[in-house]
Amino acid sequence: MRRYGKHTDEDDIRTRPGRRNTRPRTNIRPKHEDAAEGMVLTVDRGRLTCLVEDRIVLAMKARELGRKAAVVGDRVALVGDLSGKKDTLARIVRIEERSSLLRRTADDDDPFERVVVANADQLAIVTALADPEPRPRLIDRCLVAAFAGGLEPLLVMTKSDLAPPDKLLELYGALDIPHVVTSREELADGGAADRVREYLDGKVTAFVGHSGVGKTTLVNALVPEERRRSTGHVNAVTGRGRHTTTSALALPLTYVDGWVIDTPGVRSFGLAHIDPSQVIHAFPDLEPGTEGCPRACSHDEPECALDQWVEEGHADPARLYSLRRLLATRERTEGD
Image (cartoon, rainbow, N blue to C red; front, side, top):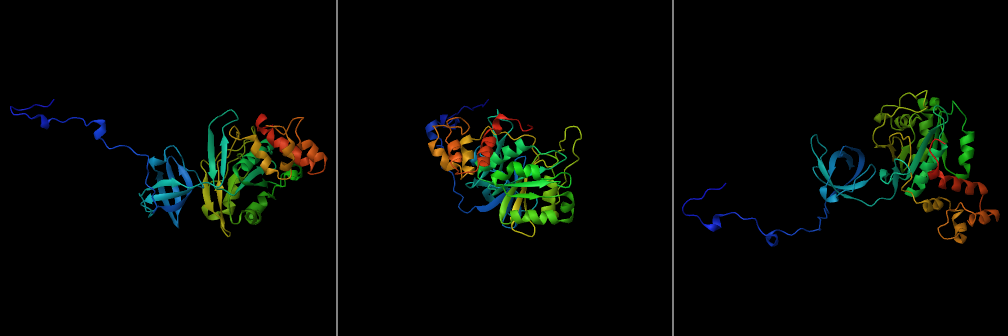
């Protein structure tokens, strides 16, 4: 409580300024035209590791970005201390427009999508041919996410010394997806890494696969100087591996240009965010045949014009089968 003497003056009393006297808020944000360009390499509890020119810079997201989050692969604009020295922190003030986006949900009923990687050119879907057994429905879901997100798919099959790849290649042959078959011996001597690099040269490639398939082991072979802890043993009861990659990480390739992005092993790949109508764009040989389809055609119903299109010889029936199998993935569980 303020005490006043005998000679008080009203001007001496502090008053709260009226709303008209306060500085008005504005939606205008600084443009930061002098901000430096960088690439997000990894995200950990609100701190983002970025590559700025040839320096590794630790940064945080500016409040003015609101709830928009930066993810691995994002091209960003940074201000502040960009020296990369210890105990320094820069600020991300802008996230540039994305050329592609790999997204997933926890399951098909989850309305909240998770952005996994931004600006990747290619999605390498890694699957073991045995130990653990291949999960075609999970592969299908990854393919749908790749097609919808603007990424080119690449199928990488590991552990060919335990089982032949013929059955899996027959299943995906009609999709005309590039593929590489590797064995554990080839990974050890470097031969498999050399063949995989041919598909990665000049591209940003995100690697995805469920635990135990050898995904991180393959990434370690591609980027030997950035050794990450290899995947653990496969559980003999469940047939699934133990998670050892806990966050996405972008790494520069050795011997060729390009980047690999190692992502945590997935046990499910929800597609609640995917519009099924986007999947047809991955089938340019079938897409013209949809012109005669009824409105909002699911492409898997009696009135679908694609059946006649294929019967007339415009496309391979196996391609139509593959399209409908991918469209049906949301109605099936990954373990089917």
